Amino acid sequence: MSAASDHFSGHAAAYARARPSYPPELFGWLARQCAGHELAWDCGTGNGQAARALAGHFARVHATDLSAEQIAQARPDPRISYLAAPAEHSGLPDACCDLVTVAQALHWFADDAFYTEVRRVLKPGGVLAAWTYTLLQGEPELNAIVEDFYRNTIGPWWPPERRWVDLGYREMPFPFEEVPAPGFEIRLEWRLDDLLAYLRTWSATQRYIKERGSDPCVELGVRLRQVWPEPQALKAIAWPIALRCGRKA
Image 1 (cartoon, one colour):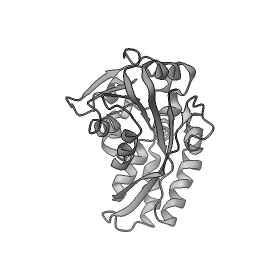
Image 2 (cartoon, rainbow, N blue to C red):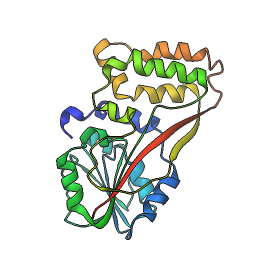
Image 3 (spheres, rainbow, N blue to C red):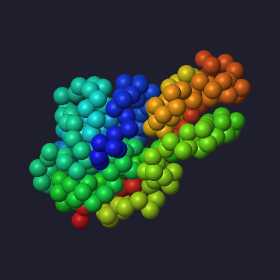
Image 4 (cartoon, helix red, strand yellow):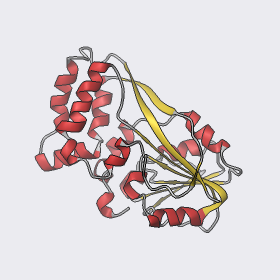
């Protein structure tokens, strides 16, 4: 993961506030795939969302991210050690990890250097799990407006790696023996401001703001008010999770 792939340092605090958390069932399932529960490495940890959940299942969690600004937003936990480091340099010894996780980040660094590091640090039979959540789903009218914003308003500002998210990580290089995974999803109830805050954390939205000098979410908020006339009303939002899971021989 090069410096050019750091899309979130500039709005790390907003990212920590606005991004949804992952379902506990996901981490319970991952723990059951592992023979041991001594150490998990959460790569691309951001502000530590997945790391905190892993700490409920593993004695220690090593959490790394390229962005020191993102890590600065992480809540301290005695079970978690945080390190600002690129994906291909974990800082861990050989064959020490029971599990390596990558939450909403593999599309930025799915290359030979990272996978070599994963094979080095995993124990024999250890597990690599990477997941991404795809475009949110709500009421049909809401979906149509958000998808138009996603594809047309800010579409030209998405980095090329975003295509892997659109594909649900299908066809992405993943050189491990695959473990069949069940379906998971994030489910929340949000107010309109919650949704707009989340959409502002998208890398394409931030690139649009930087290059155009205006916030596209202002106009989007006006459009959304047509289908969300009471902004304080809670609406159900879901994100399907695409999970790739593999095992070291």
